Amino acid sequence: MHVPDGFIDAGTSVGAGAMAAGGVGVSLRRAGQVLDEKRVALAGLTAAFIFAVQMLNFPVASGTSGHLLGGVLAAVLVGPYVGALCVTVVLVVQAMLFADGGLSALGLNVLNMALVTAFGGYGLFLLLRRVLPKTHGGVVVASGIAGGLGVVLASIAFTIEYAIGGTGGVSVSTVAGAMVGVHVLIGIGEGVITALTVSAVLAARPDLVWGARDLVSAAPDAEPVLVGEAA
Amino acid sequence: MKARVGLGVFIGIGLLVAFSLAFFVSPQASSKPDGLNKVAIDKGFSDEEKAHSLDGVPTAGYGVEGVDNDRLSTGLAGLIGVTVTFALAGGLFLVVRRAGRVGRHGAPNTSAT
Image: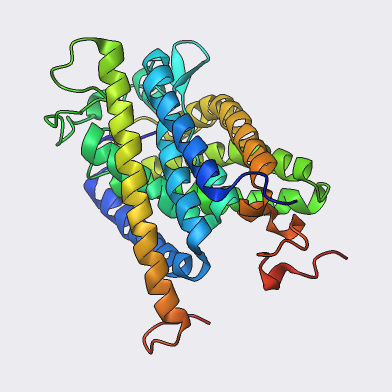
């Protein structure tokens, strides 16, 4: 879903850039308050893993492919603020080193693929966790569904940007229908990859999973804020 | 709920998985247009795309300039990308953590609460 230069006009791209910069700035400040030594390493790994999996385009309907965005995955693993920064680093590397995603569109891409997923998608994860069982299985299912819906949210964000400053004169309803339609399919792939990855990390190091930290009881390094969640 | 593997082992295995996916699997990824590009082609705004300003960098388009074997070229680009991403993200989070610790210990110009 990397927006190239030219799809969205300059004014809208600048506006998105300002919003993205604001979101990244807030994330940097808040990340400093939650990062400990373990999470620094996990966050670095999360970014590297998302870069790798973003290269793995999988086929969806008729001549179309999709790939992981990873915002919900990152947010579940390391929290939404650090998670948004993980995906932002990936997008910067892709734009600067691999010419993937336009430079003038970097703000659009950070907004859609890092911030909308890591905050909007993670919000859905939190809602789902309220209704699902308080177990590892519940966390896995919530992360998968939220991951898939996060992709749809990102496609809606692009549609809004196209409505404001899109080029080529295609009607917004046409773009909306096509974008959401194909990204529902891509979202299924995102959901499966997100759920499998969260499940693997929960199996090996449950204490590292931000989105399941309420399930960690009596671990020596459990955060004091979360003790007392048992009722 | 106890940790089943040490942190170093966990990070090491994780990186190994990332490098393996980037090197061995990425050359087999679908080369069809992604969702957004397909919509742009089908609905008729793909011609609006402008050439990327960094199209000239030696790793543009997930390949390594001068490596003729496509699979190897893509795989190497993947290894480079994973390495750079890990280094950049790790470095960023180290700095952010240090700044956050300073904030928690009462530096005057932060809003840490």
